[in-house]
Amino acid sequence: MKKTIISLIKNEEGATALEYGLIAALIAAVIVAAVTALGTKVSDTFTFIDSKMPTPAP
Image (cartoon, rainbow, N blue to C red; front, top):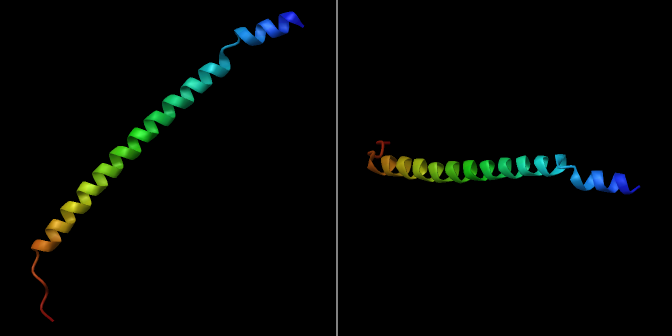
């Protein structure tokens, strides 16, 4: 029983999987932030272009 508990304490496979999960979550958060910022700039650009275009005649 004691050997089993010691081997569970020394086992680091779960910790490695957790670290990879945290890295993936951090990368995903950075991607979401970048896409959000880029989307806002693109939207602002299209709004500016739209405001400069003449209104079509009826």
